[in-house]
Image (cartoon, rainbow, N blue to C red; front, side):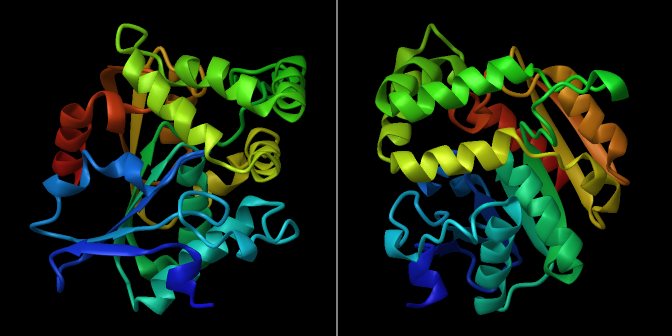
Length: 265
């Protein structure tokens, strides 16, 4: 099985241009970027992919041992870039993919020109001893993961609209719900455990490329204080607090997201 088939890699845009790689978040796939990519297609070679277990990736390639940490997903990113002979890419990661991109850039900095982090969080659990606010207490995450394990479809239908925000536009929450529901429950649970129980705070100062932190208001997954923390700990970063609400500005506020990215790039 080829790497490009494994991750359902799609190429478009300017064939000989610099690469812009889009990496989706938990429970999503590459279709979530459809409002952003046309704005960059005249300048960049657009690279889209699905993580194994998501979208139209090869489900048979899923290995619970490999994907028991974000390092396994970072390896996938690097393998895709190597297969396509890409260096100096702009990597656009949503949510957990922000940290996956950071890990990949630390391992092979020559393959990255910059990182665009959309709603990043290095740790979702609060850490009172360090004065760190991630947004969740241990009981919160335990309940979230237990609910996923016992009734994944019910969890999806209740959590997705909360994550999306923008309650006055229910079609957005419905799209995210449907995306969650298309993901294999066992894979989704393991990815959620890896995501929500991880701690990548110590990795942020090691990121060797410049970064853009895009933070939304009223984000129940990654509150404003988290985005500010990421910006503070990265060696070289810009921070933009969007007027967009929720956790998915690439869907709810694409024009504002595009404008911030264009200024950075």
